[in-house]
Length: 183
Image: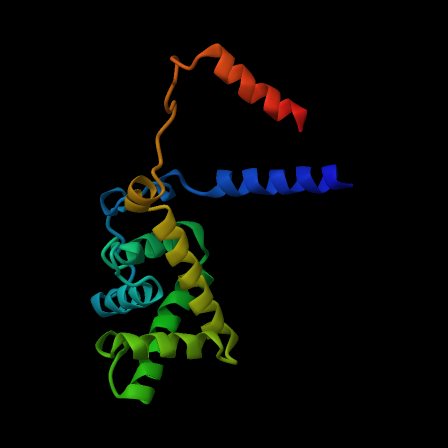
């Protein structure tokens, strides 16, 4: 029974990796190219949303890594027209909710107010608003984790073939093998 679920999970993981576009792993702002589906103000709002989700600390934030461009490219290339419309509607809803709560658009309010507003939108009874926040949150995390900066500087990613340690004494290596087989 566990073998079947393991094979099913492995198949789903391989399918997920196959469906991810090649540019989405180790991406840079230059590799994404120009994505111009949003207006300048909408793109600014999206940049502030991703910065609110992953703010800058001792490491660069999502905005400085241009994760908002990654999210726009993913929505354009991998999601349907409903998600593209949901992005525009969600950005408009975010600015409207910000104006109602604070009298300013989302990009002009304080970071603590932004975080509070996003939490409020994520718990909104409106399904479309909740889906928008969850979609942007997921894409922000995915884009940040797959950015070249994070993969190289934080995760210490090495491209294949990796390292070869040909100077390890055989007795030392055999001792490790015997310990593993004893268990």
